[in-house]
Length: 366
Ligand code: 13P
Ligand code: SF4
Image (cartoon, rainbow, N blue to C red):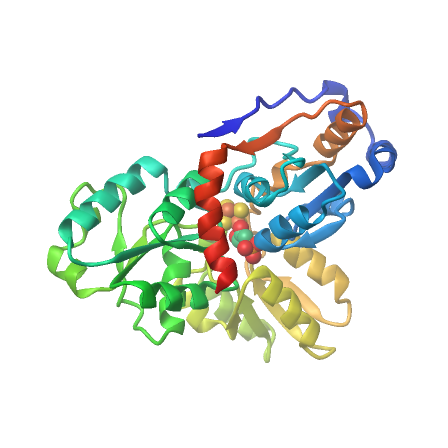
């Protein structure tokens, strides 16, 4: 089981302290901690906290870089829970991973709980006793699901390497069962040359083979879990049409957690790292519409004053859980650490971590 330390109450006064004072206090506490601490920041974090990150990146890059910072025994993760868990799984024994708000979950990761996954797995393996079924899970999943996948011969993937992971999994067996993002799964299947409707979709709310007809299940070799990100499913083809009408020649880049029709209507799709890299390559004067979380798009807009960078959905509701990591929370964490207390530690049990590590190592070996 994953152990979750209780979220310590944020001192009430911290919420009302002026921002300049919080920045000064957080800076002083950070300096006092020196090399004992490394702060990792995901691209979707608010500007007010990402400025404190020693390393920024996508979820997997950050987990690895934390473990490589062997001089630091404290890792503060500016991101969401599954990322902090992955950092703990990959961490050195002397390191502790701290998440400033333990309520910072991920809607997509929550779509696949281990009990429902176990039940689905049992049904599929009972249905096809002669087939080898290979489980794959997206990085956006709980440590318990990563461990399940590791125990059953599968691997983890990220949006940056999903295509490679799918190819690998298809070589290992007869069927791939992918958790928890239907859209990333379908977009990846299309990259492999399959039709969008070639994979079947397992609905965890249906008791009968996930609502899939037995014949259709037998005929398909990719099963996708019916999970989704509530931020990326907010992007639509209509928004792309409007962006093209307003900015002729605009380049539209979306994250592969977006539904298939949106990816098809866009010019490109890619992980957060890919989006950042692509924007760097585009010439001065380009107009670029981006379909991913608002904090990243806004930062890209600020960092590329020579281009017109905007979010595909103007009124996008940003990822609310990413935004739970605030400057008052970070200040509280840093001051607690400087005072010798270690709040909000994220720990994955050793057995679970060992199995999850198998799945992560298989991804690394791809
Ligand atoms: P990355 O894997 O690119 O870090 O993305 C994580 C995520 O949550 C996307 O919504
Ligand atoms: Fe999860 Fe979506 Fe937020 Fe990414 S943007 S952390 S997938 S809810």
